[in-house]
Length: 259
Image 1 (cartoon, rainbow, N blue to C red):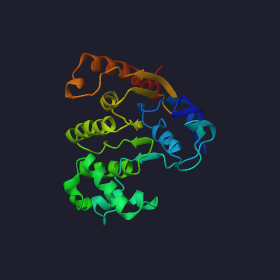
Image 2: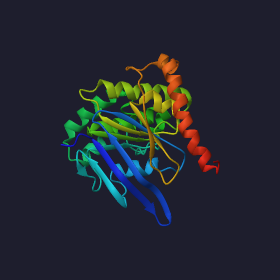
Image 3: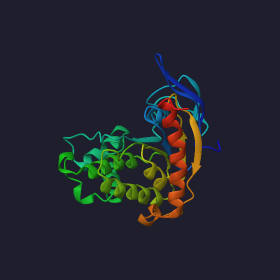
Image 4: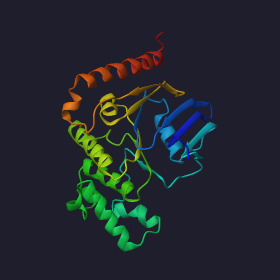
């Protein structure tokens, strides 16, 4: 068994005449929460898709538990920015979809869907259609759908980016509550453009260069857990924000042609 849950080594990914990732290296421990942060177009979402088996890659190695990623992996659950809910299905039925595809018997999938809806605080909305839910509630249904089939790894592609600031902060707290309350913590890779979001959620932040992207720096987030509103106002949080901002600004300036 590998010492690393996720082990990406010198990964290269290119589209015709457009390199996206180059010499990308990232290793993540089991149960760790890591965010990918970098300039727009640096390949954050591309690596997420590669890890989930939704896209191939050209060079290097991507391993989960020491095994190469080859195609879609049922042990990796993906939550996108768009909710991707079926509009004609209730919240309960949307959560059951992945379980049905995996052949879980009807009674079991109904029970498991109800359980994860309780976990994300949506039991009372189980019979509502997506258009009857707020944006934050729809995103919680999307998270519940992934949690229902119990993947080892959760990957998030800017899941809260389209939400207002108040809802976004609330769901950040909810995500940590869910992650911390399970019998074992899932391994999480979280793509975001928000410095504060990355700091609040993560154990480490992988700072990426401008495209073609690689990991430039790994910043430890030595903030105690559980994290609260007071965490955001601490001197430690401010110190880490300054460090992350410095690294990010360097890449943005390079992208603008500055020395």
